[in-house]
Length: 449
Image 1 (tube, one colour):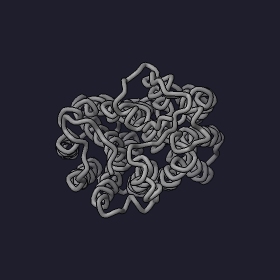
Image 2 (tube, helix red, strand yellow):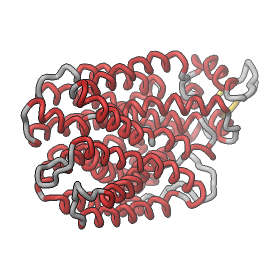
Image 3 (cartoon, rainbow, N blue to C red):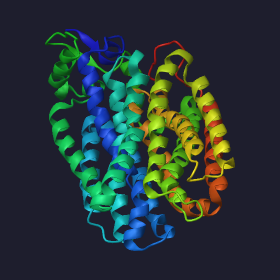
């Protein structure tokens, strides 16, 4: 009877068409996660007008979603380690979809706060499980690309949220984007429950699911004997020593990496969501004077630049490693924020502002998305969901704080508002320098132990 270590089998295997389809399915969930997560930014100006309210009325609305995502990320990762990444991911998708649909019937900011918190639980749980699932579907040589192609769908979803909002709000009202953002994930969730398999590494740890594992491996092009037994990795005794204990993310050999990731996620998400949640509101302020459609286009540009930047970063990591690349991207994003802080936005001459927003969004989003691949590198299979989920949860605290931070930053004018992006990315730069277990240059990615 042959014992097969599933981790090495996948790590050294081919990058098959079926695996690419699995990454596509996983990525689709995160596109819709990104849509629902970022709908609040482009719809706040319209909701303000519809409900005759000021910016401060939406402080807690902007806070509630990421506050829920903090808990969703923390418990979603733990849930994924216990019941499976695929189960946790699709449960999260269905939960945020139903609540997002309910948002379309909200009649004021109070109920919107409650609904955005509940949606945040699902939105937060989807991200770490999607990242882990993508990392465990593919050969190690493709892991960074697979994870980044999945998480890059957050800014892609944000781009779609801005684009769709710009198309439908004026014609159908400010509730229409929420209905679209709720119905589409429900449909996709039902489809993926039928076609998306569980992580092979997770299945290997559960003898009663080995028939399912054999089928998945066969579809990935691996022929295994009918009587084969499975382990997740080559060293089952070492894995059994801690059995996936949550405290392992604080083990002395990982503590420095965990701290670096926590600071990186906290401040990177804070910087990105200062832009994502408040940029249209900032630019439509009476003393600046951009129209709502143009302001939404600026936010679309911020997100769309991030899509291209993240994909290029994923490829570049394979050649240069994550340390040099992420430090460089962080430093260049600081430069972009400083230039933006020194500009005086003029609706009559907006090209320069548009280009700098694209430049800065490209870099900031590239750092954020590749950080998920780095987190998947730091933690081994047994605690990967918990490790990535906790780092994302810490990031959501920074995201949540952009709710109360947004209005006072905007009152300080564009110099303070855009300058705050530079401050957050300066901390990210230092955090990425702290992490030891970076993805190595020109070497296959290995799960950190």
